[in-house]
Image (tube, rainbow, N blue to C red; front, side):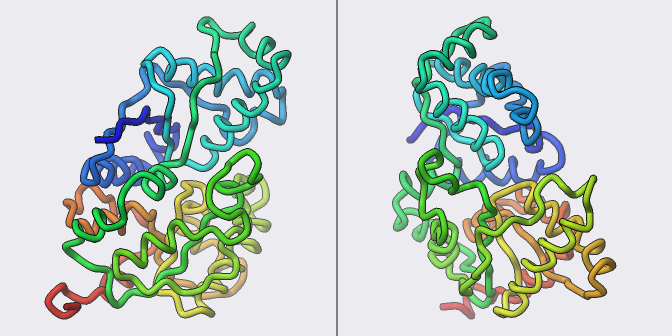
Length: 294
């Protein structure tokens, strides 16, 4: 069994609880043990680096130091924003002078020995696709999916070092492995508006509206994402987008772990479909029953 230190991130304990629970469930089913980092703390999320780069890095480095105290060298997080902060801090600490400034702020110095990856990367690079395929009990046959990665999971490539920074395929390949029809989605790494949802709802409406429109144009029944902020903008704010753009989008937006868990036959209580704002039954109803799919 593969063991990795697990950083759930703040949203995983609140607004994206269903992402955390479904992530834990699918990793357990695929023999990946997620070991919670003791006394983990916020990584600084979106705004910290705009105030002070050293302080921002220290927030992430504290968590990396906690992983080191566990005697581990690999950590995983489901959240691309957390991933960006953790990897950026590590990248900057390759500079000894910057590393010294960061460690001067920490009770426990960070050696910078931890490789942090997205949970998606861990699954894509460490779990045999045939193992996943062999555990599928409810193929996603019949549903058309647009895979949306967001703008930071794979960029900048020299820092993130996972998949292709313009045309990533990890989620596409996973969804296809589960039996879904993955439609070509030209905006898979475009920005949804990110954290502008509160101060500039008009920007989110415009950018997320483009994503919803593009997914409709390619015939997608649903969008699948790996980012809590992207999921929130496309799902929770879909009604606001409809009002702003005079549209009538009704496109469910899943976390990829929810559909992976569905295909693996995991108890729906662990997948959190009821937390989605756009009714997921619109898309789930298109999935053929196993006896029909064979």
